[in-house]
Image (cartoon, rainbow, N blue to C red; front, side, top):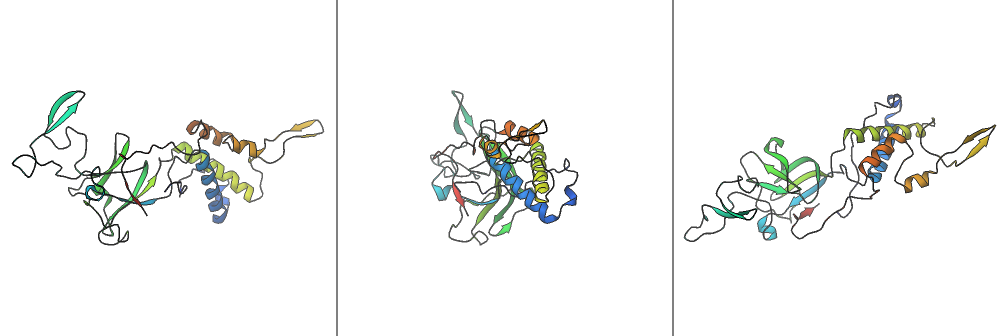
Length: 268
């Protein structure tokens, strides 16, 4: 999981391509695949990537720091259940936290993600798909978290020796990255439109290798596509506006921070 797997089924808006419906499904599919792959690379691979199977580790699996479950308490003197309150430092002030979720901002039962999340496709426990109404996607301290809302909790631990659909497994299928905004859908649709035109042999706005031409007093200059791509652009004005807006520094990928305190888990 060191490199993103690429975009999968990006929603594209082809309303600015009047002849899109006239192309065959094969040409549409090829143009869409080519356009989304190129646009994904030029925008720094920050939007929805192909779904991955994430198997989170619970507290018993990774020795603390895992997802929260209820009840969470530390053993107290003369009580196996723990103290009725937990000391908490709030901006330098000691407070006694005795209400679940009210003082710490942590949900009763949640799973942190190791990356940004564009969408959660499904959750499987023991191979059974969980109803989407049983959870929601939150963010706290910049970390996306899957919160259980049906009154139950996520498994305390799972057996990594079994398959993703076997008993004892806990799998979250999600799309890393951020959701592609409407402007990105329009840009992808316009780029796909030009690729479809090129595939069909029609005139398109894609830059060609011609650098300069002078004939009968008319001078024509076309930018070299290799120079455009080196600058992280396509040569199509509307598409390049979106690229400049979301990736002004021409980054190849989003900046990442590695820390032992970040959530851990296994991707399969």
